[in-house]
Length: 198
Image (tube, rainbow, N blue to C red):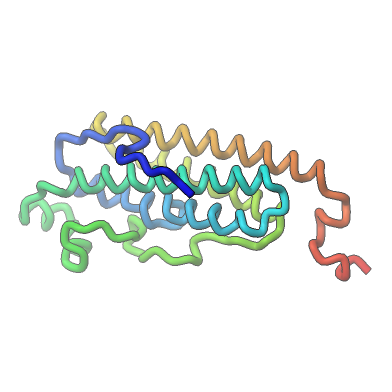
């Protein structure tokens, strides 16, 4: 179904390890508004989407979110791969390290493990696309917060790219929502089951 290019969608070349930055960026891997949740949200919602063009959009953005997860994971890996034991302890990265070592494991910056409760799939066009719009804005806000917390231009560059893609996704979902509403009759906007309108 897909052709996988063995390169990142956007290059990541971080020269200086920084466990503190890795701890906050971790949220965009496995946090509630991160790339893993986004990919699973859109790739799940596409199956019940009644409009093929919107289902295709969900597939496109869902797979792009997987590419963004790769970028985030590359950032975290490059920030943590050469840390000494002293740096791990001093930065507070030891609480993560003790369970996962140098491996990447999806969790939020606060240490909450990834869970499917981070995303929703309802099977209702309006509900799902509204969820998607909100998700993209929450992800953008998280990237804004990360940019406030990091100083290294090697980190900020790919984070800015990812932030910009959240804005584009928000715009595409907004267009999809408007186009979908134009295709629905009034009854379908409020209920998928016609029995509820009787």
